[in-house]
Image 1: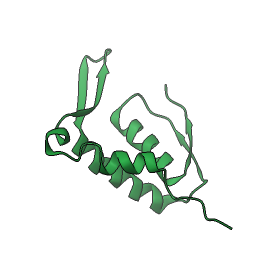
Image 2 (image 1 turned 30 degrees about the vertical axis):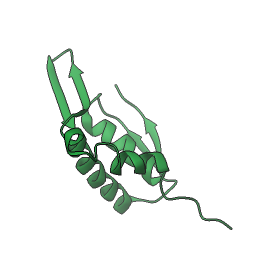
Image 3 (image 1 turned 30 degrees about the horizontal axis):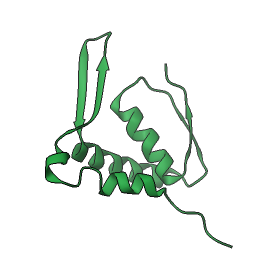
Length: 98
């Protein structure tokens, strides 16, 4: 019986290839604007990559493929990191944003 893949090729590609060129590493990969507080958060491809890989390692230590994770957060960078890392390691995400 074939074993299921531990991640998706698309996310592996985005982690390694997207932003691999030095010029792209510092470009904005994530830009969140909070209209209520009038704040902006921007992260470069390199910052996103580092934070994403750290989040993957944390989630892998907490559970395994197929586990369920309820994510209750506002629209912020940790939300996107957690969602993407969960999908990469095979955790089922249940969004409960407000």
